[in-house]
Length: 118
Image (cartoon, rainbow, N blue to C red; front, side):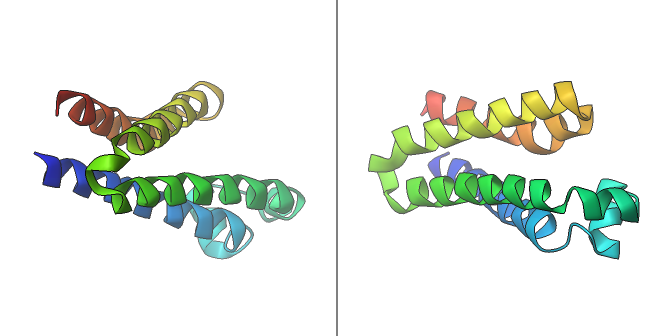
């Protein structure tokens, strides 16, 4: 069970690194505009905001990886960062798109449940 939980947390961290790359480096490229369904004008105008958001996603990924590197001693770190990801997923669903909850919030919720059941 611990291995599955850590794999799930690792997947969540990888997803957040992907979000970082999309938001910080690919936001105004054809790939970034397609993923986020943006016009070229909006992507250009919001590039700095997206980069800021990408940086925060990078911090979430770093926190999850930090928790994983601590092994059993990292449970509280993993709980904290999974909770942060869940809250971000809920907020994104309420303010932008429900899809964000399914991509970001559901895996974090599953990881939280598994961490609490250990």
